[in-house]
Length: 465
Image 1 (cartoon, rainbow, N blue to C red):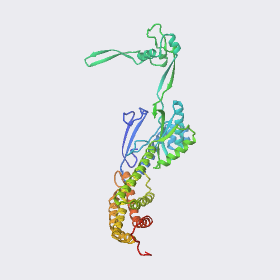
Image 2 (cartoon, helix red, strand yellow; image 1 turned 120 degrees about the horizontal axis):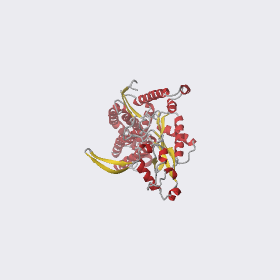
Image 3 (cartoon, rainbow, N blue to C red; image 1 turned 135 degrees about the horizontal axis):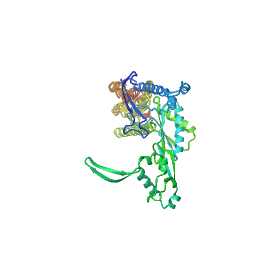
Image 4 (cartoon, rainbow, N blue to C red; image 1 turned 30 degrees about the vertical axis):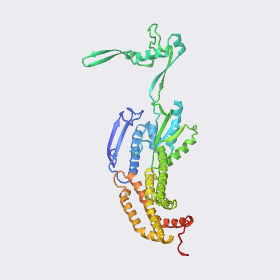
């Protein structure tokens, strides 16, 4: 990886390291490799995607070398994910995130029975692996730790005058040990622990022969009152909303998060899993919550702007005319996003909220000028014509200065362009389209609505005007 063009530094941690974001399945069999690119300017997202594809190919080549010759021939034309799965290698690639610490795609599977939960998680993992556009699919149910399970026969325990608590305490004292006393030395205090020697507690057969009688005589071996079996325990027991759950994570190719989420929902529906046994989380859930909150914020912003203008103009009609600037601005935003290929994101919606309070300024100035001319006794059409001519230059100057001030951000130069550029494009496009359309649409809307709704002694201009 360090030899790839465009790589500045590579930092690797092989083995276990205690970190705040470390998973429960990390240990001596895992490694973390951090890759820093040389230049962050330009289309950073595309360069990161290309680098991740190269890293997948490198790891797949290393894993292919661990396979047998027959397996290599059979998987010669397979995708890197298939080769890694055949070699028993799990690869997860993530890029630094600004607003979220979650994986782009997370499918949460619920079931109280651990074997059934593992089976469903494996089905979901296989389904997501077959979908195009998804990479690095993995399940949180990793291989567990070996354990010895002891199942007591309570009838036999009662016949010997024992109970499970007493027997369990005897086992813990003989295997784990019990502190008998503390020795004082010059270097400090040392605990003296009493337990069986290692040769008598090394294997499962040794455990079966352990005497669990507190009186020591007569000796009662453990296998006389219990059944011992070797099994594999879970690597972790994860509960979400008090329900045992497994999380299947995946990265996506590109930025169409909502489209991938819909494809995953359709694929999981075909599995006919029980209702309520799965849900899609991760960044998709965060995006849905953010979009809902921003839609509410946009509606609230428009309402507050209307209330303030209605109290200022002392009219409910004129603020309604002014609010026509908002859809005019959104028209330019949609066209600009399509032309530049910018996806609709939280930053774009923040720019739309900003536009709701900014684009109405030009319409406010124009409507206020029209009202002042009409109050001076001019006819409606003449007032609209004169106000449009008088406010043309100030409106154009105001919009031009704002657009030029945001132009460096729209060019996407320097670090942080991923956040700045969509916001600048949204505001610039909204202001430009709103200004051009306001000069044409707002006077027409004002004339039509006032003719229909206003009643009063003000005369209309001469017939035919």
